[in-house]
Image: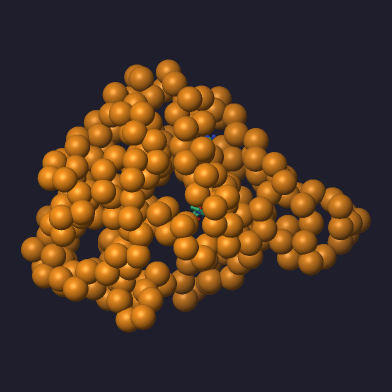
Length: 264
Ligand SMILES: NC(=O)c1ccc[n+]([C@@H]2O[C@H](COP(=O)([O-])OP(=O)(O)OC[C@H]3O[C@@H](n4cnc5c(N)ncnc54)[C@H](O)[C@@H]3O)[C@@H](O)[C@H]2O)c1
Ligand SMILES: [Zn+2]
């Protein structure tokens, strides 16, 4: 207000997903909404957080509890900014890129498995492919009424792990473990052909991401976060599970989930 900003004054969010969520939410609410432009500088923000129009902030009670759907007018991602991003952030962001390949781009999935030298020499193509998968899905389902659930791949167990680890695991690490575990679940119920989880694990390990729950982890602690999962509908958790690379099924309920978790 002091700066004299008006309804048409755009907000520019230069930074990672945290800056994008905060600036996007501020833009959604200031004067009942001003335009904003996302200039993502982390891999996760480029391929995930800046796309889809969701903006939110956390409360002490939990993540993303206050927010709005307010898509940026423009997303400007320069792969050159990734040159200074710490390796651990890059690695974590790659879990979402592998997820995008699994959901809808078999070539991207293959490229992820070729290792860092290849990935870093092909950022533009890899980003373009990962972004295209997410855009395709959000265009079909802008307000998250159905098809967007595919984007939850690896995230149902991933979020439970992230919370149960009290955020000792980074988001991408938890998602990587979740992608493999959920593919195992898909094999177990006969949705995916056997070997899919191994091939996903192979790609993630090449990138340097974990694929197994840390050995000292109390598996029972996963059930509490799962039971409050906001994707819970009609009393049971609904999973998005892979059938094969490039194809995902949504809305799957699993009666044997507790046994699986105990044995996982
Ligand atoms: N709105 C959505 O749809 C959505 C989707 C996924 C995640 N998110 C949110 O995004 C956040 C995570 O985003 P993130 O992974 O980008 O984390 P982040 O924004 O915290 O950035 C990670 C770190 O990298 C630094 N950084 C950013 N760009 C850099 C660069 N080019 N070079 C060097 N350092 C750089 C940042 O200062 C920060 O320390 C979470 O809060 C999550 O909830 C939102
Ligand atoms: Zn994610």
